[in-house]
Amino acid sequence: MISHETVLAFEYDDAERASIVAASVRGEVGEIAGDRTRAQVEREGHLLEVRIEATDLVALRAGINTWCSFVDVASEVAAVGAKRPAEG
Image (cartoon, rainbow, N blue to C red; front, side, top):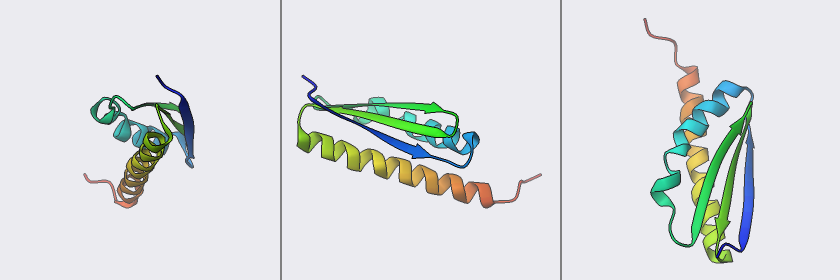
C-alpha cells in the first residue's frame, strides 16, 4: 500500500539537456523498484520530474536520496559531454 509520495522537479536550460538526463535515468525505473517504493520519470520541455511513491517514510527518504543521486550524476555527465568539441 502506497501512502507517501513526492515529486522531484529539475529544471534545465534547454529541452535537449532535460531529454538527455531523462533518458539516462529512465532505465533505472524498473531496476531499483522494490516492494516499498516505485518511481516514474517524466519530461516536458526543459522540466524533468521524478515521482516517488513509498509505503513508509524511511523508504521515501531512501528513494529521494537515490533518485537525486541518479539525476545529479546524469546532469554532470551531460554537462561535461556538452563542453566537448564535436568529433568529425
